[in-house]
Length: 228
Ligand SMILES: NC(=O)c1ccc[n+]([C@@H]2O[C@H](COP(=O)([O-])OP(=O)(O)OC[C@H]3O[C@@H](n4cnc5c(N)ncnc54)[C@H](OP(=O)(O)O)[C@@H]3O)[C@@H](O)[C@H]2O)c1
Image 1 (cartoon, rainbow, N blue to C red):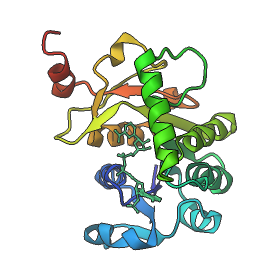
Image 2: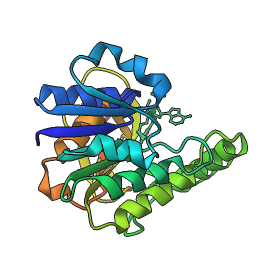
Image 3: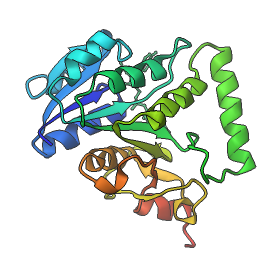
Image 4: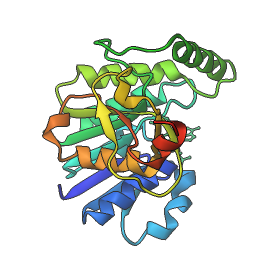
């Protein structure tokens, strides 16, 4: 990996992604909304910033040119297909053969063996309905975005995050192929480690066309299950 594009670089996850890429010596191109460019001011002399909406094909085409890897923070804000537009732009314009890694949550499923609790399903449905009602976000569009990724013949990985928290790194998260695996019981990952997993996935052949569900391996998990 030499040059990596971070799509959605100015958010919390995006900044961690950029940091891990810089630590590995990669050239970094970051895409973020025009109004968020200032959030990357401290990194501006170390990365290339491409301002613009992440669902704009022209913006993405410019940003991903020459990149061996693309890390996409997939967010479902608004009701105008932001997540699916972002995913489509990356799928359409990334260099042939580039490793594409997308972020999402456990609610995303390929329908091939995930097991959800009734409580989880109800929670996702409630958040989906509430977010739509106030025109804040369209969770179903993030589902559509991932379906497009799953159907593509690109070199993709969709990383499905547990609940997230801030805090010092705990190391590379563990992963399971299916939600519901006992390995994932703590449902808690440090956000910096989520980013670390996505960056590591760029070079991990085992994760090609996989949708790993991840969880932290450290004290965060132990805190949730002190008796374990
Ligand atoms: N939060 C969780 O507990 C959780 C759990 C599991 C998985 N995930 C996944 O982790 C990823 C990052 O989520 P996060 O919650 O940690 O958020 P985050 O890293 O802070 O990222 C939020 C992103 O959304 C952009 N954004 C904010 N408002 C927007 C708007 N109105 N229109 C367009 N873009 C907007 C931000 O861009 P600006 O900098 O321009 O505002 C930023 O790039 C997502 O893929 C999410 O599905 C999150």
